Image (cartoon, rainbow, N blue to C red; front, top):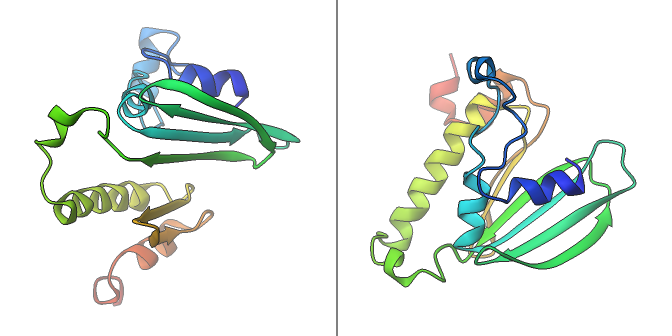
Length: 157
């Protein structure tokens, strides 16, 4: 995405996907109301790095509690990477509703795995506490993605 689209994507109610009511019936993306990135960036340290395909440069935007704290020109990467750290660090009242770290990690891992299964065209890298938990590459067929995500005893046979 472009630099201006990256900035818009982190604003509340931002969307470039819907121009008419009929567009609601033809969504092929991870969301449509423009709330997710704004909401996550408002309660975390959030970074989005993006460049349009073929562009020489892209942009890295870092937010802390919803405030843009750093904007950097980066080499063109031809895609978008989103990094979320310290979720809910600035909202102590929300922290009390979280379960144990291991339980929350299971929820995150399960959700990302489910999304990865249905989107083999998207690369997913999940790191936790500085360690790579999983890496599902880009450009896999649906069958290859299932084989890389699911246990062998499920995908064999």
